[in-house]
Length: 230
Image 1 (cartoon, helix red, strand yellow):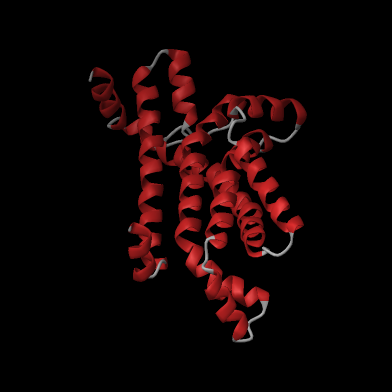
Image 2: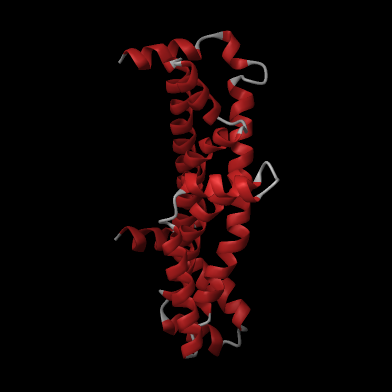
């Protein structure tokens, strides 16, 4: 309880709201790392998951899809901090050591959910679309993707929350973000600073959850929302 009260007093100090170590600046850094990692994840994992789910004909396609999804699920077991240390050793870049583990952490839910969402589309819907003369690309984007959208958004939400929650590790490699409050607070035994940084990370994760909940209501049709809920 005392830690929470100390953190609240820390938030009330004017010095925390200005300068390079102020909350607005640290939040902006945290969002920058998170946004870059999320963008790369979406560009890599979402098209791949949709394509693997769409290509269903042939044993080779099935084996490839299973192998990629299994590899993505296996990546969940990789230690994030270990990846950071390895990236620091192997890379001369400042951003790579933080972006690499975040991307590896976030790819599995996006890829697996996109793949599963398209795979679960009823075959008669695909057959009807093809019977109307739609090309494979049109079937994917006009039929399969809208039906798979609830699962796709769930994967994107999971990835975004994981990225925002884990981006605090940027402080381990000397970068900024909200992790600076946690690491520096522990090093200086300023536990109000540590608690304040942790609260900010949690609040940011909840904000991401709320944003995706709103996006879900706006993007997914009521009929699909009801069927997903049931």
